Length: 96
Image (cartoon, rainbow, N blue to C red; front, side):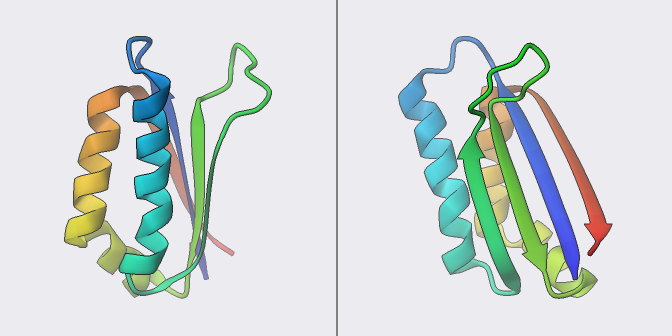
């Protein structure tokens, strides 16, 4: 199994409705992209100075499934939307 974690820090000018649209699009990936074992997305609740705004944790059965997700057209579309509204994005992928 591979765990894929992504966090987004949105630009200050991004309104709440756009943030919620991003989270909804991310959640929807689980029903569109094959190979996702689990996917959780949510808004940060602590709002610490070091916090990012939104986080995603997805688990894939293997590297091939993660690779297929990465190039899937719907993931590409949602990833571009996330980049367009973020000032910073970080990710990590590890065997679990």
